Length: 401
Image: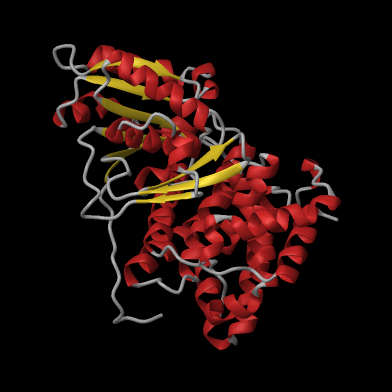
C-alpha cells in the first residue's frame, strides 16, 4: 500500500447514532427544509409495524405539522428491482414529495438513491440509463440534487446509507447494474439498533457476512489507504467479536449498535477503496441469476475466493489476519497469515451457524459456463478479471458440486 499516491476519501453523510434515534427524524428533515417526505420501505417492515412506527413519529413530533409524510411506498422489491423504483418515482411526482426517507435494508437504501437520481435528472426509464451495466457520473458535472435524503438502515450489513453507489437489479436481463455518482448517498444516516431487535437471526448473520466482506475486500484493495484502513480494520474486528454475542442474545442492543456502526464503517471503507472486489464480482453474478440474497452470497464466496485467488490476496495476508483478530500475526509469513484469516472466517461462520455452500439454491451444474460468462461481464470484473479456471473452481466449491 502506497502512502504517497493520490487518493480521494469522502464521507459526506452525517451520522446520528443512538438507541431511539429515529425520534429525531422530523427535526432533522425540518432542519434541511423538507416539507413533504416520501417514506420508502418494504413489505416485511410494513408487516412487523416498523413503517407505522416511523409514520407515527412524524404525527407526534412534527413541528407545526411540517414536515409531513407526503406518501408511503412499501413495495421496494429485493435487490432494488427497477420496476419498483419506477413505481416509487411516479408516486413521488404525483404527491409532490420533496424529500426521501429510506427505511430498510440494502435494497431499500439503494433504491432510494436511484429514486433520487431519477427525480433529479427527470429519468423515465432507468433500464435505459443502466443499459451498459454501469452509469458513472463525475464531479464537477455531477452536483447535489437538493432533495433532502435520510437513510435509516434496519440491517447491519450493506452500509449503503453512506455510499454514492447503488446496485440495481434488472429483472428482464437478470443483471445487476451499477449506478455511481457524487452526492448519491444520503445526507444523513440514523443508526438506531432498536429497529433490529426483531430481525431474524438468519438475516442478522447473512448481513454480517456482507459487512465483513466489505471490510476485508477494502483491506486487500490496491487503492486502500490509511483512511480506509482505519474504518476497515475496526469494522472487521467488531464484527468478529460481536456477531456471536448478538446471535446468542438478539436483544443485546449494545452489541447490535456496535455491529451497526461496523457495517457503516465497512461500506464506507470499501466505497473509498473501490478497486478489486472479486468476492462481489462473483456474488453480483450469482445473485442476479439465482436471486441469492447478497449477504448470503458474499458470505459463502468470501473464504473460497480468498483461497482460490491466494496469489492476489497473499500480499495482504497479515493485514487480513489482523482484521480477523488472529493471534501472533507478526511471526507468520504472509501465506500462513492468509491461511489463518481464512480459517478464522470459516470458524466464525461455523460458530454462528452460517451455511457455507449454496446447496439449498440448487444451482445447476450444466449452467457453469453461463455463470462464468455472467461473472466476466459483471461491472466489478473490469478491475481484475478472474481467470476462467479459477471462476469454475470458485463456483464449483460454492455450489457444493
